Length: 180
Image: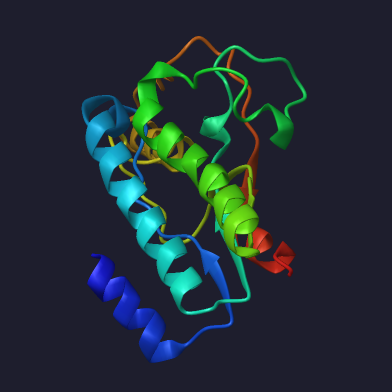
């Protein structure tokens, strides 16, 4: 909630913030709950960025997602292409909520001179990930499917066409790359 977020900023008085808070889920969870993903993440982002502004935070680095890029795009992709078209329909709620961080950052910069920015890491996986086949992200879900197929001696079935391009980074490596 906004009051809890504001209280957190008042209690800790951070000078720099890495904004990673989000409601996340795998493909099927997104398909089932696009509106919930949009509403929840827009509220989270607004609470964090507005509280950071009110608390006088010097710099905020928010984490976006590769799903914010247009569904129909050319490769390689870069940050200038974020708003060039609609995201894939399967997770439009989460995608648009994450895109709005870019809009909010621009607003806080132009109107208040804030140093709010964002990074767009590739797909991150690692310890404490969600390995649910239905609700987890692609790589942990795939690892779980491989494990179950190996355990039962059954064939491995992978969903999709095989055409989407994906890149992954191990979370502990990603953490070591972060810098101000």
